Amino acid sequence: MKDSLAVIWAIGRKDLLLEIRNKDVVVAVAGFALLVLSIFTFAVDLNQANAKLVGPGVLWAGIAFAGVTGLNRAFALEVEGNTLEALMLAPISRDLIYLGKALGNFLFIWVAQLIVIPAFAVLFNLIVFRWEMLVICLLATLGLSAVGTLFAAMSVRVRAREVMLPLLFLPVVTPLLMAAVESTGHLVHGRSWGDMAQWLQLAVAFDVAFLVVSAFIFQHILED
Amino acid sequence: MNKVLGFLDPLLIVSAALMGVALYLIFMWVPTETNQGAVQRILYFHVPVAWGSMMGIFVVSGSSFLYLWKKDEKWDRLAVASAEVGVVFGAMMLLSGMIWARPVWAVWWTGEAKLTTALILFFIYVAYLMFRAYFPPGAQRQRLAAIIGVIGAIDSPIIYFAANLWSQAHPPLVTGPAADADSALGSDLGAVLLMSTLAFTFLFIYMLQTRYKIRKSEDDIVELKRASNAVEASQA
Image 1: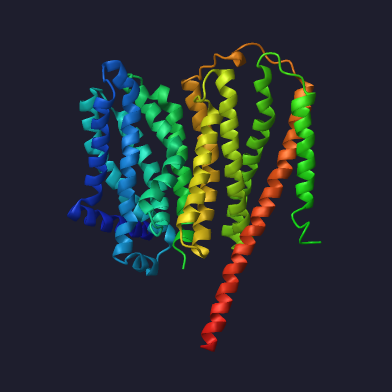
Image 2: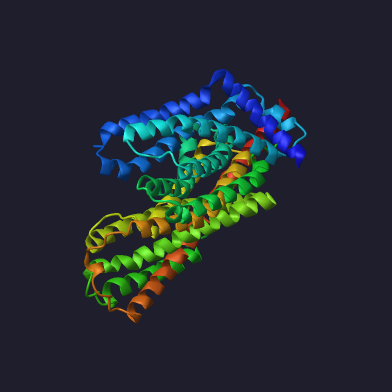
């Protein structure tokens, strides 16, 4: 157990170190999401009622689309540097490689949200700084990185992977996005835990299901 | 003999005969429904093709799972054949449903749970086929495609649950004739629907079998080419 955690952390830390040095992913994800948000500020007439109505949807659509651009990088670097073979040669099981890569993606999307959500609060003039928002973001980011890491590993060898990843990723994460949008909707209307409980439960179920299944199935992706 | 009548597969004959009976029942025999009028007859196509697309999804996920487990090529062939036929049936389901909904619900589309689920699943299986088209052929493609099939199967109950929850929060607006009283067709409707579903089930199986055979021939051609290349290489 302790060894497994050490392996996961080692892979996650490697990605984190790379990211701290070149800041590729976080800047791309946050920049893309900020652009989506600011385009919507003039695409939709944002009075107070409208902002509450469309804001949550725009926020999560922006984060999901931006997440795809970041996830595309996750395995692209490994393939460009021929380091994926090295990872596969290492005497560790494949599910740990998956969890390590997912940890890295989770942290990147999470940090990008730390930039995007304050900007969302400012642009849409909504109050979102509450504990509920922290939980929604954690659950959504966990699910996005769990599914995203799996599909990024699959589409990395496809020609036109920039097209393939969103086509695979977005329909599968739809239930998670629904949960995030609806919980955020309750939040901006000033409601609390009780109203969003069902949606948060759904997000937890989604996260657990896809983390377990993806870790289990990952050995089939990195075969031969 | 075999060459001339080769296309007359027994499954084809059965499904054509059943389809003829179903068409007669739908357009000549069953009375017009009082509330919705003639447009209600779309139901006799819509429900069977929806059933067909659902069978398609079941077969894709089942055979994807079996492929990952057994690594037998035949499961991969069955999965891709079923995905293609299922996507065709799915497209027919979505289109026929919209044509029906416009006069009856007064909208082309609404956020109802079954509609949302059907649309998202349709997208997942379109992505499945696109992935296969984009990926270079070989065992890896089959493995990865099988993973998408399995993921789609795991996702579908979650999608349905979420869509259901979502449509409770945003009740779909139904204002057309369907908002009025229940229809009064009863047993006639059931009988025609059953007949039509049977006809489309046989059509589905026939198309699945045909696509499977084509897929098998494609694999055989690849195999033959490889063998002939090997012979040429050894002679040279």
